[in-house]
Image (cartoon, rainbow, N blue to C red; front, side, top):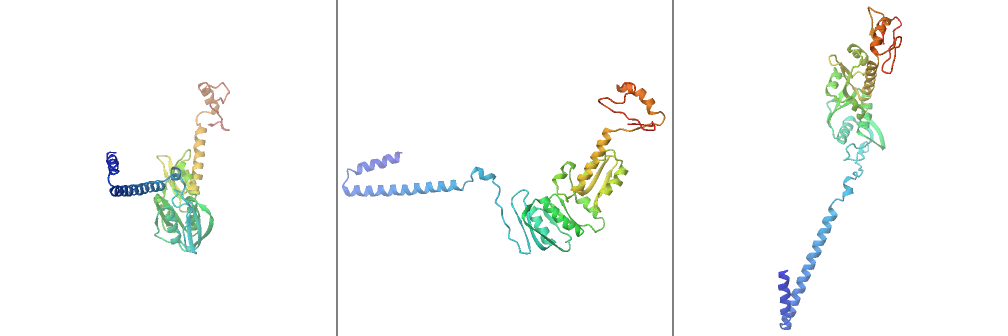
Length: 302
């Protein structure tokens, strides 16, 4: 402000000077004003440019645009959203070798591929109009791999191809398979090979070894933990869901029905003593809280 007053005062004094000096002062003032105008225009333009470069709030949450990845005409694949947490994959493979296919899948799924053995043959699957989530895409690959005696197993960020015909392949798969909680099996792909631990319920350890072994495939494994009355099963998520439901049914049966085997007394004699203690009238075998049944030979109470 003080500089402006000095400059204005100089103009006022110049008005009283000879005309040549006045013209020089006016010319200088014109140049100063022009320079200030250019500087102001540049400052305004820079501010507008900076504001245009700033992200607008609603765009921060917009999904990334779909991108197409150029591939070879014989072997190709693309993601519908490369930066999506669970991107959709599109298959356009024709006669592709398995090394190329699995490396492509591992890259799209952000997995680290361990390819100690390369499956023989080629892979052909062409469905460019439909996008597949990672779990569904792995199901498609495993369906073809299993036909050739191989399986893809995930553990965290590791993806490994296992030859099912090698010795002790079931033990190897059981060691590398990821342990998944029984209530989270639906979150995995149907063919995803994982391990889960289930309670035995009313099933005995021997019965679990015999009966559950019939529900698993050649590469599946059943490990019974007798002291904990639990069983660890390694299989595809789809089969583990079925095993979980079977064991849940035995748990429900175990909690709802109790069998008492009698040796020295008949059921009728025992019930005459037990009914008053259970709040039952003579000859009554049920109330709102329980039901009692007697075996045909009078040697069991249910």
